[in-house]
Length: 276
Ligand SMILES: Nc1ncnc2c1ncn2[C@@H]1O[C@H](COP(=O)(O)OP(=O)(O)O)[C@@H](O)[C@H]1O
Ligand SMILES: [Mg+2]
Image 1: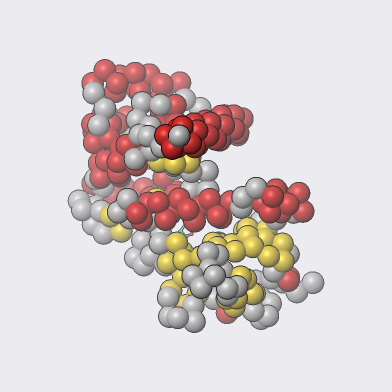
Image 2: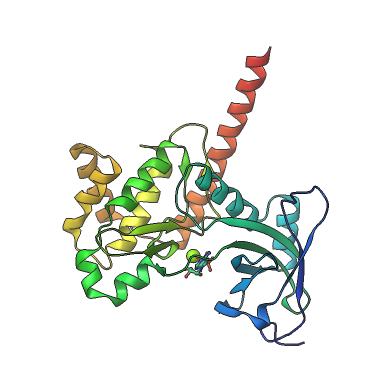
């Protein structure tokens, strides 16, 4: 089997959603592109599309069971695509979604992929903090926490709220934070401030940041998020006891999927009742 990242054969995918209503096939060229990340299950590359858009393509390889789960339910990339669309509609900075698709991609095997617009001159927040002691001292993170507050007020549960899923552009005193990578996102019909979903988004973000930054930075972030002093001291106690683990992520993932499903059923029932 040819090595997927050097195989010159183009990869063909039907783009979703289709603007015209007709199937539209896009040809992609990972072997002729700049590969940003390659792992056994994932390849991410940057490519200029036929219309001139500079894009980043993330391809996730899928085994047969996951593939059928995706086909029968929904693909990870479809959820991420919709989450990014929602962020755009809220006016928040994010990797602009272009299209998603799935298929049997020849030497890559079965997979699903997401195309977003390339964000130039950015670095992931975790890399930046790990590499630059000066930035650790000077970077103003309050706009990021204010953004998370606005998302929660809009009912948006990020689900993978980690420093590595934030890109940073610009100077340390006036940074731009760009959101990406949110396949576990849910959008609830009402604001989620004060709920378990919001609490875990905040715990995951604070937990990844405390690897690089002192604990005395936390109150400033929470104030920017919009927490009162009482709420902040409860959160600080939660954060001290917080441990990220696969078991925790799976448990809250299942719980929040169920909560989102119940919330959408309740909303549909309210619509039906409202119409009668
Ligand atoms: N649209 C984009 N513009 C610039 N860089 C991107 C873009 N999409 C992804 N990247 C780069 O690829 C990395 C991994 O992307 P991510 O969406 O987080 O995928 P994964 O599921 O592998 O974590 C990001 O940290 C970023 O450096
Ligand atoms: Mg990521």
